[in-house]
Amino acid sequence: MRKEWLGALSLTLAASIWGGMYVVSKYALAYIEPFTFVWLRYAVAFMVLFVVWLRFGRERIRRTDWKWIGLVGVIGYVASISFQFIGTKLSDAHTGSLVTAATPAFMVLFARILLKERLTPVKVGALGLATVGVLIVVGWEGEGTYRVGSFILVLAAVTWALMSIYVKIGTQTLSTLTLTTFAIGVAWLLMTPLMSIEVMQNGFPELNGVLWLSVLYIGVVSTAGAFFFWNKGLELMDASVGSLFFFFQPLVGGTLGWLVLNETLHLNFFIGAGCIMTAVTWSTLAERRQQLPISERNL
Image (cartoon, rainbow, N blue to C red; front, side):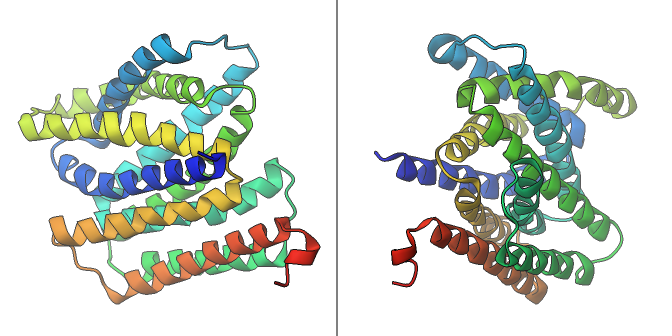
């Protein structure tokens, strides 16, 4: 299988899994506090990935590699995922999957700063259109905690975009399995104090069978599996092209939120989704066109 097709399959799987994750996490967060849920999620994911790493992916990690492991773990797996869970708890599943889908547009900005990619008029216009789409969803729908949750989800999108750039850099010297495994390990350790504070305040949640299944699903499928697939896809494909596949997330998340949780999809959701999808599709296709030989660009 060509690496482009393998990268596309990996990114599609990751984004689709995350779309469904918002529905599962929305249910579980009604009973488990956000930081405790993240800690449980990483405990399961790290144990699974570490066993796989010991069996199939063991490699030497140089001192300089820990910089990228740490940045991915702190910015992506601690900050972004915490913002994501808190925002979803305060808003709803389909808004969470949609607002964080603005991530690819923010990746354009960070790619310019960190990778020195040229900031073209198309990229600037796409970033502006995606921002408008996010503001439509955040600013016109809901009040109080819903609006606070929506803005926290914007922070989740920004930090995940920054992390994705560091993944692209880190996988130049590390395997995807090693980077994903130890970045999750770092995040697990850093989430322990936050989880401990929640447990001291609220006690450890009583987990029934359904909640344990939710934790296992989030840990094994949505974390160990999806994080690996996303990082592998970014390794195999150009970041701006790969970002297009993020749109499977709001499509799956919005649809499942409507089917499973009986959430209402307001008109603003579709307007905002249209703006964000148009922005990222526009910038991605323009980037791919620029990579073609000059003789083929007008065909």
